[in-house]
Image 1: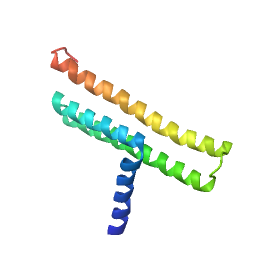
Image 2: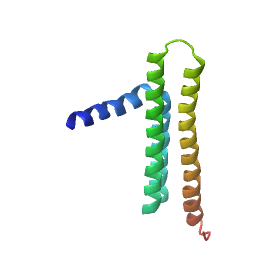
Image 3: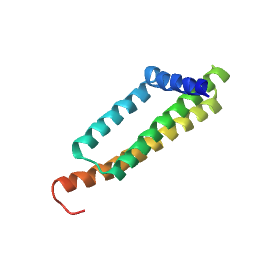
Image 4: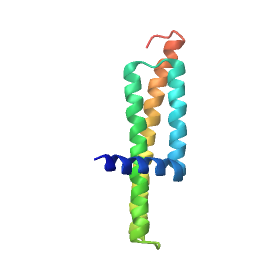
Amino acid sequence: MLRSFKYATDGVFALFRYENNARFHLLAALAVIAGGIFIGLSYIDWIVIIIVIGGVWAAEAFNTAIEKLCDVVSPGIHPQIKAVKDLAAAGVLVMACAAALTGTVIFGKAILKLFSFTF
C-alpha cells in the first residue's frame, strides 16, 4: 500500500515538473489561495475552492496520462488518436471553466461583502 502512495506521489511530482499546463494550474491555484486568505473566505467557500482546484488538477493528470498513452500506442499522426487527445483536453477545459466560474461567484460574493453590499 505504501508503494502505491509512492507511485502516486511520483506522478504528482512528474505532473507539475514536466507539464506546462499543470504548472499554470498550480500557479493559478496558489493565486486563488492567496486571494482567498486575503479576502477571508468562509469555511464552505474554502471547501468548494479546494474541490474545484483538485478537479482541475485531476483532469490535467488524466489528460496527461491519456496523451502519453496515445503517444506510445500510435507515435505517428492518426485521426482517431487526435480525437482522443482533443476530447481529453476538452475535459480539462470544461473543468477549468467550471472552476473559473465557481471562483467568480465565490470571490464576487466575498468582494461585495467587503464593500458592505448586501448579498
